[in-house]
Image (cartoon, rainbow, N blue to C red; front, side):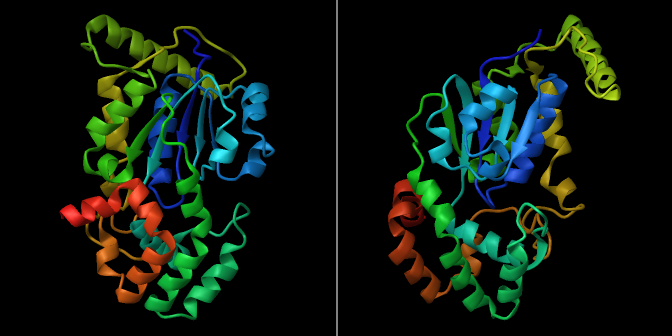
Length: 287
């Protein structure tokens, strides 16, 4: 069955596990035979996301540096949006920009930013990142968190219980079949998977039947397992830090290991309202 509507979206933010989430989303899309595209910058969709969706007709889209200014005009979608404690975003961004994030055509400005960070000690470098990240924190603050067609989820919940939370995500997107994985369903799944592989071998020049509209829950969980942090981090468990890895540590609350009084004060002055709006400060007080 060819699934064309609604368009499914993942809306993410910089240093909010977007690469990992995109890999899982793309894996599910691929097995269902759904056309998936990933966009990092509005120039990739001509600064008009609604028109891009109408004209290009992608069935699944990962907008990994989401800006609500480009999302608000979208209709007929099912989506999930992932945020993270902005303090952890700051620390993750610092190490990524200093060491691991690839410098490429999508972000050539990173070369100059990395050179600046290399001239600063960690304390001053973190302050520099707090200043530079205003654009991202503004996007988190400007987001509409009340849309019924967008599932709001925290990265901390997703990384803490990825199997349960990804089932929740794909249930919301109506892309998972959580019923018993019967023999007839297994036969349909393996037939569909073989046909999708055949399509890829001919580079999409041939559309074959027997597409699944929903992926068995067992296979969704398998895709999550295939993208486990330990595999992404070359065998390193979450919590063991490698500051030069794109998958550096993988646990929440790391800002406490790196913020000093100056960083805390700066964050409260400039981003305290955002922290309270997202609920992270309330959790800090309870802790």
